[in-house]
Length: 300
Image (cartoon, rainbow, N blue to C red; front, top):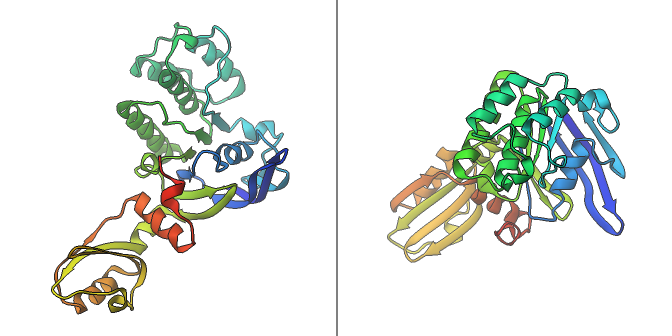
């Protein structure tokens, strides 16, 4: 388990992180969401032991991660901006990482390079941004580490490669209890892979949630009624939002599905249905309750 307690980090007058606390369970896929400048990269680097926090503590399996070489052999960090040695090729990268990570799997690395159609002898500085990201991901997957810290890893990958990378992560989570921590500004990128989500804003964490619990606890109802309705007609519901467009009412409410349906049916709808919510809709609803305009925070 990764545990951060009251983490703060400043760069001069800029406070990048402000008293952040979070727990990330072993074998889970944790998504870290927030706009550019929210503190995602800084938090990820603190978790990975690259930065030392000004205040607070970060531990992995109850060990301090900063300046802990033995623990860092079990952690792989993928930067948003790819850096490689001058004039190196993927084979040079293989030799380098084999010296750092004792469990590095050479055969898997070469196999994945072939599958991704990356020439192992071609200079990496001639690769596109997406190809460089692929090399980093392949190295991370092949490293045999228990924790992979991914900073905007899917940015720059085409849809096919993006799905392939997610499949690789998912397979290793299932087979060897890998724990990927994925920072992104794009909720849609995380929806189909993460089981826990944390939302950062202005250096602080608004909340962390189990994604399945969030989806089970919040429901969207669309309904049409023969008579006009107001928010007060659905007072028994814990409503997160209430919207009327023409004759169509859209309600997002927290609670058990059967209880919500009973309240809606009591108003004798002409038509009603419960719809699944997207991760973005869930976050918008949750954060609006806390007084944040998430639509503005997460707009592309």
